[in-house]
Length: 300
Image 1: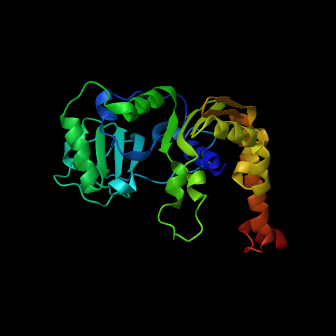
Image 2: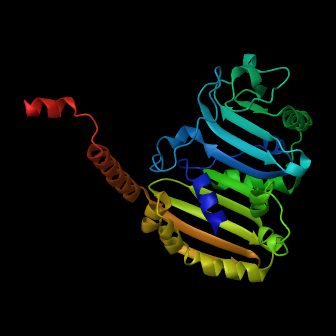
Image 3: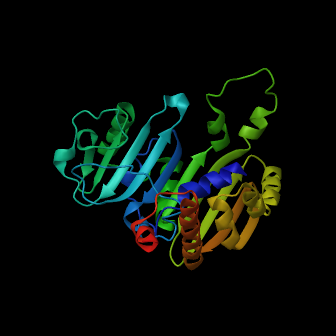
Protein backbone atom coordinates (compact mmCIF):
# COMPACT_ATOMS: atom_id res chain seq x y z
CA UNK A 1 0.00 0.00 0.00
CA UNK A 2 2.95 2.33 -0.50
CA UNK A 3 1.04 4.14 -3.24
CA UNK A 4 -1.65 5.15 -0.70
CA UNK A 5 0.94 6.83 1.52
CA UNK A 6 2.48 8.50 -1.53
CA UNK A 7 -0.88 9.90 -2.61
CA UNK A 8 -1.80 11.13 0.86
CA UNK A 9 1.50 12.97 1.31
CA UNK A 10 1.12 14.69 -2.04
CA UNK A 11 -2.44 15.80 -1.31
CA UNK A 12 -2.50 17.18 2.21
CA UNK A 13 -1.45 20.73 1.42
CA UNK A 14 -4.43 23.11 0.91
CA UNK A 15 -7.72 24.51 2.17
CA UNK A 16 -11.48 24.70 1.41
CA UNK A 17 -13.15 24.51 -2.02
CA UNK A 18 -11.98 23.27 -5.41
CA UNK A 19 -11.35 25.56 -8.36
CA UNK A 20 -12.85 25.07 -11.80
CA UNK A 21 -10.58 24.84 -14.82
CA UNK A 22 -11.62 25.97 -18.28
CA UNK A 23 -11.67 23.32 -21.02
CA UNK A 24 -9.02 25.29 -22.89
CA UNK A 25 -6.63 25.35 -19.94
CA UNK A 26 -7.24 21.69 -19.07
CA UNK A 27 -6.41 20.76 -22.67
CA UNK A 28 -2.85 22.13 -22.55
CA UNK A 29 -1.78 19.35 -20.17
CA UNK A 30 0.24 16.89 -22.27
CA UNK A 31 -1.95 13.91 -23.23
CA UNK A 32 0.97 11.57 -22.46
CA UNK A 33 1.34 12.85 -18.88
CA UNK A 34 1.67 10.08 -16.30
CA UNK A 35 1.31 12.28 -13.22
CA UNK A 36 -0.73 15.45 -12.67
CA UNK A 37 -1.31 17.23 -9.38
CA UNK A 38 -2.82 20.52 -8.24
CA UNK A 39 -2.05 22.50 -5.09
CA UNK A 40 -3.95 25.57 -3.87
CA UNK A 41 -1.16 27.73 -2.44
CA UNK A 42 -3.35 30.71 -1.60
CA UNK A 43 -5.44 28.84 0.94
CA UNK A 44 -2.81 26.39 2.11
CA UNK A 45 -1.49 28.76 4.78
CA UNK A 46 -4.79 28.48 6.66
CA UNK A 47 -4.76 24.69 6.72
CA UNK A 48 -4.28 22.77 9.95
CA UNK A 49 -2.00 20.47 7.94
CA UNK A 50 0.54 23.20 7.23
CA UNK A 51 2.96 22.00 9.89
CA UNK A 52 2.65 18.35 8.90
CA UNK A 53 3.15 18.78 5.15
CA UNK A 54 5.00 22.03 4.42
CA UNK A 55 5.03 22.74 0.72
CA UNK A 56 8.23 23.65 -1.09
CA UNK A 57 8.63 27.02 -2.78
CA UNK A 58 7.69 25.78 -6.23
CA UNK A 59 7.55 29.32 -7.59
CA UNK A 60 9.45 32.47 -6.62
CA UNK A 61 8.66 34.35 -9.79
CA UNK A 62 9.77 37.96 -9.45
CA UNK A 63 6.92 39.54 -11.37
CA UNK A 64 4.09 37.33 -10.24
CA UNK A 65 1.46 38.50 -7.85
CA UNK A 66 0.27 36.01 -5.26
CA UNK A 67 0.24 32.59 -6.91
CA UNK A 68 -3.09 30.96 -6.14
CA UNK A 69 -2.67 27.52 -7.69
CA UNK A 70 0.08 25.36 -9.18
CA UNK A 71 -0.72 22.47 -11.52
CA UNK A 72 2.22 20.19 -12.32
CA UNK A 73 2.21 17.57 -15.08
CA UNK A 74 4.97 15.01 -15.60
CA UNK A 75 5.27 13.37 -19.01
CA UNK A 76 5.99 9.70 -19.64
CA UNK A 77 9.71 8.82 -19.97
CA UNK A 78 8.88 7.03 -23.22
CA UNK A 79 7.83 10.42 -24.62
CA UNK A 80 11.10 12.00 -23.55
CA UNK A 81 10.01 12.99 -20.07
CA UNK A 82 9.57 16.65 -19.28
CA UNK A 83 7.36 18.75 -17.07
CA UNK A 84 4.74 21.43 -17.47
CA UNK A 85 3.94 23.78 -14.59
CA UNK A 86 0.82 25.96 -14.78
CA UNK A 87 0.77 28.98 -12.46
CA UNK A 88 -2.54 30.69 -11.71
CA UNK A 89 -2.87 33.91 -9.77
CA UNK A 90 -3.40 37.65 -9.92
CA UNK A 91 -1.12 40.09 -11.73
CA UNK A 92 0.84 37.81 -14.03
CA UNK A 93 2.36 40.62 -16.08
CA UNK A 94 3.10 40.30 -19.78
CA UNK A 95 6.68 41.46 -19.16
CA UNK A 96 7.27 38.13 -17.43
CA UNK A 97 6.88 36.25 -20.69
CA UNK A 98 9.98 34.70 -22.17
CA UNK A 99 10.13 34.48 -26.00
CA UNK A 100 11.94 31.16 -25.71
CA UNK A 101 11.17 29.23 -22.53
CA UNK A 102 14.24 27.75 -20.87
CA UNK A 103 14.65 24.34 -19.28
CA UNK A 104 15.31 25.82 -15.85
CA UNK A 105 12.02 25.21 -14.09
CA UNK A 106 12.84 25.06 -10.39
CA UNK A 107 12.24 27.61 -9.11
CA UNK A 108 10.36 29.52 -11.78
CA UNK A 109 11.69 33.03 -12.35
CA UNK A 110 10.72 36.02 -14.44
CA UNK A 111 13.06 34.93 -17.24
CA UNK A 112 11.41 31.58 -18.00
CA UNK A 113 7.68 32.18 -17.66
CA UNK A 114 5.37 32.18 -20.66
CA UNK A 115 2.13 34.09 -20.07
CA UNK A 116 -0.98 32.59 -21.68
CA UNK A 117 -3.45 35.20 -20.47
CA UNK A 118 -3.96 37.53 -17.53
CA UNK A 119 -3.56 35.45 -14.40
CA UNK A 120 -2.11 32.35 -16.08
CA UNK A 121 1.49 31.49 -16.97
CA UNK A 122 3.40 28.30 -17.73
CA UNK A 123 6.96 27.09 -17.41
CA UNK A 124 8.81 23.83 -18.04
CA UNK A 125 11.20 22.24 -20.50
CA UNK A 126 11.13 23.76 -24.02
CA UNK A 127 9.45 20.84 -25.81
CA UNK A 128 6.65 20.50 -23.26
CA UNK A 129 6.03 24.25 -23.12
CA UNK A 130 5.86 24.41 -26.92
CA UNK A 131 3.38 21.54 -26.97
CA UNK A 132 1.23 23.39 -24.43
CA UNK A 133 1.41 26.60 -26.47
CA UNK A 134 0.35 24.78 -29.63
CA UNK A 135 -2.66 23.30 -27.88
CA UNK A 136 -3.54 26.65 -26.29
CA UNK A 137 -3.46 28.41 -29.66
CA UNK A 138 -5.96 25.91 -31.05
CA UNK A 139 -8.42 27.73 -28.77
CA UNK A 140 -10.55 24.64 -28.30
CA UNK A 141 -13.73 25.13 -26.33
CA UNK A 142 -14.08 21.42 -25.57
CA UNK A 143 -11.94 19.30 -23.30
CA UNK A 144 -9.60 17.24 -25.47
CA UNK A 145 -9.43 13.60 -24.48
CA UNK A 146 -10.04 11.53 -21.38
CA UNK A 147 -7.23 13.11 -19.33
CA UNK A 148 -8.55 16.63 -19.87
CA UNK A 149 -12.00 15.58 -18.69
CA UNK A 150 -10.55 13.94 -15.57
CA UNK A 151 -8.57 17.10 -14.79
CA UNK A 152 -11.71 19.19 -15.09
CA UNK A 153 -13.67 16.85 -12.85
CA UNK A 154 -10.97 16.74 -10.16
CA UNK A 155 -10.58 20.54 -10.21
CA UNK A 156 -14.29 21.04 -9.66
CA UNK A 157 -14.54 18.42 -6.91
CA UNK A 158 -11.48 18.92 -4.72
CA UNK A 159 -9.16 21.52 -3.22
CA UNK A 160 -6.03 19.47 -3.93
CA UNK A 161 -5.91 16.47 -6.18
CA UNK A 162 -3.70 14.16 -8.16
CA UNK A 163 -3.95 11.68 -11.01
CA UNK A 164 -1.25 9.07 -11.63
CA UNK A 165 -1.04 6.36 -14.29
CA UNK A 166 0.82 3.11 -13.57
CA UNK A 167 2.54 4.72 -10.54
CA UNK A 168 4.21 1.51 -9.35
CA UNK A 169 5.85 1.04 -12.72
CA UNK A 170 7.08 4.65 -12.63
CA UNK A 171 8.70 4.04 -9.24
CA UNK A 172 10.98 1.31 -10.60
CA UNK A 173 11.82 2.86 -13.98
CA UNK A 174 15.52 3.45 -14.31
CA UNK A 175 16.47 0.92 -11.65
CA UNK A 176 19.11 -1.67 -12.61
CA UNK A 177 17.60 -4.77 -14.16
CA UNK A 178 18.53 -8.27 -13.06
CA UNK A 179 18.03 -11.85 -14.25
CA UNK A 180 15.20 -12.62 -11.82
CA UNK A 181 12.24 -10.45 -12.77
CA UNK A 182 9.60 -12.91 -13.91
CA UNK A 183 7.01 -11.56 -11.47
CA UNK A 184 8.05 -7.93 -11.31
CA UNK A 185 5.62 -6.70 -13.97
CA UNK A 186 2.74 -8.52 -12.26
CA UNK A 187 3.29 -6.19 -9.31
CA UNK A 188 4.24 -2.94 -11.06
CA UNK A 189 1.27 -3.15 -13.45
CA UNK A 190 -1.21 -4.07 -10.74
CA UNK A 191 -2.30 -0.44 -10.16
CA UNK A 192 -3.40 1.11 -13.44
CA UNK A 193 -4.52 4.51 -12.16
CA UNK A 194 -4.73 6.54 -8.96
CA UNK A 195 -7.18 9.40 -8.46
CA UNK A 196 -7.05 11.18 -5.13
CA UNK A 197 -8.57 14.37 -3.79
CA UNK A 198 -8.96 16.31 -0.57
CA UNK A 199 -11.57 18.76 0.66
CA UNK A 200 -10.23 20.71 3.60
CA UNK A 201 -11.84 22.70 6.35
CA UNK A 202 -12.74 22.04 9.97
CA UNK A 203 -13.25 18.42 8.96
CA UNK A 204 -10.87 17.36 6.18
CA UNK A 205 -12.21 14.74 3.77
CA UNK A 206 -9.74 12.57 1.87
CA UNK A 207 -10.82 10.27 -0.96
CA UNK A 208 -8.65 7.89 -2.93
CA UNK A 209 -9.54 5.60 -5.85
CA UNK A 210 -7.17 2.89 -7.03
CA UNK A 211 -8.08 1.40 -10.39
CA UNK A 212 -6.58 -2.08 -10.38
CA UNK A 213 -5.85 -4.44 -13.25
CA UNK A 214 -8.53 -6.92 -12.20
CA UNK A 215 -11.44 -7.10 -9.78
CA UNK A 216 -9.50 -9.76 -7.86
CA UNK A 217 -6.66 -7.27 -7.38
CA UNK A 218 -9.18 -4.70 -6.10
CA UNK A 219 -10.55 -7.17 -3.56
CA UNK A 220 -7.04 -7.99 -2.32
CA UNK A 221 -6.10 -4.30 -2.06
CA UNK A 222 -9.28 -3.55 -0.14
CA UNK A 223 -8.38 -6.25 2.37
CA UNK A 224 -5.02 -4.59 2.98
CA UNK A 225 -6.65 -1.17 3.08
CA UNK A 226 -8.74 -2.10 6.08
CA UNK A 227 -5.50 -2.60 8.03
CA UNK A 228 -3.65 0.38 6.57
CA UNK A 229 -3.86 2.51 9.71
CA UNK A 230 -2.18 -0.21 11.73
CA UNK A 231 0.49 -0.71 9.08
CA UNK A 232 1.22 3.02 9.02
CA UNK A 233 1.66 3.09 12.79
CA UNK A 234 4.31 0.35 12.65
CA UNK A 235 6.46 2.84 10.71
CA UNK A 236 6.04 5.79 13.07
CA UNK A 237 6.47 9.38 11.95
CA UNK A 238 3.88 11.96 10.92
CA UNK A 239 1.52 9.48 9.28
CA UNK A 240 1.34 7.45 12.52
CA UNK A 241 -0.04 10.48 14.35
CA UNK A 242 -2.53 11.21 11.58
CA UNK A 243 -3.68 7.57 11.53
CA UNK A 244 -4.47 7.88 15.23
CA UNK A 245 -7.14 10.55 14.60
CA UNK A 246 -8.36 9.39 11.17
CA UNK A 247 -12.12 8.95 11.37
CA UNK A 248 -14.85 7.60 9.14
CA UNK A 249 -12.46 5.01 7.71
CA UNK A 250 -14.10 3.22 4.80
CA UNK A 251 -12.74 0.85 2.17
CA UNK A 252 -15.04 -0.35 -0.62
CA UNK A 253 -14.73 -1.99 -4.03
CA UNK A 254 -16.69 -1.52 -7.25
CA UNK A 255 -15.46 -3.79 -10.01
CA UNK A 256 -11.77 -3.03 -10.53
CA UNK A 257 -11.79 0.11 -8.34
CA UNK A 258 -11.00 0.12 -4.63
CA UNK A 259 -12.00 3.34 -2.83
CA UNK A 260 -10.65 4.67 0.45
CA UNK A 261 -12.31 7.45 2.44
CA UNK A 262 -11.39 9.01 5.79
CA UNK A 263 -11.58 12.32 7.66
CA UNK A 264 -9.17 14.35 9.76
CA UNK A 265 -10.48 16.79 12.36
CA UNK A 266 -8.48 20.05 12.21
CA UNK A 267 -8.85 20.63 15.96
CA UNK A 268 -7.25 17.27 16.69
CA UNK A 269 -4.49 18.00 14.19
CA UNK A 270 -3.66 21.26 15.96
CA UNK A 271 -3.51 19.41 19.29
CA UNK A 272 -1.10 16.85 17.84
CA UNK A 273 1.05 19.62 16.40
CA UNK A 274 1.17 21.44 19.76
CA UNK A 275 2.30 18.26 21.54
CA UNK A 276 4.90 17.61 18.86
CA UNK A 277 6.36 21.09 19.20
CA UNK A 278 6.52 20.75 22.98
CA UNK A 279 8.42 17.46 22.65
CA UNK A 280 10.84 19.02 20.17
CA UNK A 281 11.55 21.90 22.54
CA UNK A 282 12.13 19.48 25.40
CA UNK A 283 14.52 17.43 23.26
CA UNK A 284 16.53 20.54 22.33
CA UNK A 285 16.79 21.51 25.98
CA UNK A 286 17.99 18.02 26.96
CA UNK A 287 20.69 18.12 24.29
CA UNK A 288 22.55 20.71 26.34
CA UNK A 289 22.14 23.77 24.19
CA UNK A 290 23.76 26.99 25.51
CA UNK A 291 21.74 28.48 28.37
CA UNK A 292 19.29 31.18 27.48
CA UNK A 293 19.39 34.69 28.86
CA UNK A 294 16.62 33.78 31.32
CA UNK A 295 18.50 30.82 32.82
CA UNK A 296 21.66 32.89 33.17
CA UNK A 297 19.78 35.56 35.12
CA UNK A 298 18.28 32.93 37.44
CA UNK A 299 21.73 31.52 38.24
CA UNK A 300 22.85 34.91 39.43
